[in-house]
Amino acid sequence: MKFNSQQIAALYGVPVYMATGDYTQSKFNNIEQSQLRFKINTITPIVRMYRAELESKLLTSKEKGAGKEIEF
Image (cartoon, rainbow, N blue to C red; front, side):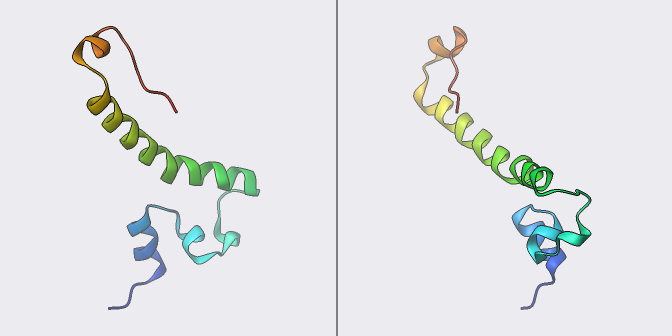
């Protein structure tokens, strides 16, 4: 099965320009903003998922009620 760049980008949850390496199509002018968008689009959801799982498995109901949280 063959996939195009839009399908691959959607699969990994990244913008198309990151999947193709063609940064001329990026709506950002510099690499700093591009990297920030990458962090927001890919790493942040994964960290939230890890945090939720760790809190559900490691914290007791009493600790959760007291406002304890796990931070990265």
